[in-house]
Length: 327
Image (spheres, rainbow, N blue to C red):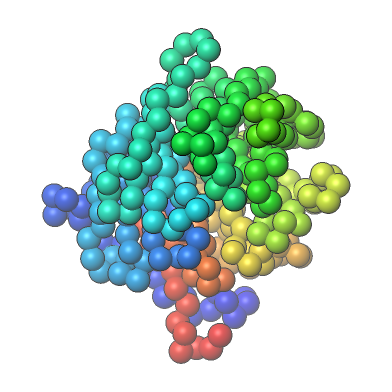
């Protein structure tokens, strides 16, 4: 086992919330900001909890109650470490401060029907906000222009995940239920967005997608349990992980691009792989999924530190390497 995963110290986050009692609702989302000083988790009781990372579990979080009907996605604003956006299977995008104050909310309108938003994603330069409706409609907003509507496109199928590339706001990758990945190209000057390319080859829905921080690769998780790995230089699939026959629900590169964590939908623990060799390096203890929600692992800037969903979806666990053992 690499030194990075030896002598890890695990601390369950003591989550008492506003009522002073431990929540029994399952965790739905988990996120760490860019500098690693804040952690967010959401639960199925419609709450959002914001923690100071240095006091994780030692102090109470800021709790936002009844933020949405449900909270399928939260996302940090890439322009700041102290605010984030949420969507909740309703028509609203909401922007919050870490103290729990609602800064802004946007009513999303579609040409036909009522919006039911499932995904939200800031571009890496923070200039464009993307939201995705349950019917595959992707809507882009110009952040600098007071979040004015920039462009809209209706994709051919349900979008399970969406990610911007590491560079600015030129390309956006959408993981679809039909097994394809649509590459979207927004043009701010003309206020348009088009599908520039479609990646094919998956035999089941693409459930999640992530780019490695170095910009070399991206990983796609699928419902049939395969993680396909692609080169950004030529958009070709070069390898795949297929060791577990269960739906992949989360893939997450470490902040330095050395490791890839893969989480599954059923009774399988989160596994960590070496990005260069694809050798399995570590299996995260007590990290099986809950009944109604999926599990996830999110890395801190320090390569070996992470938080993850533990105890069948009920607890956030903080894993930190003992610094006395070496670096």
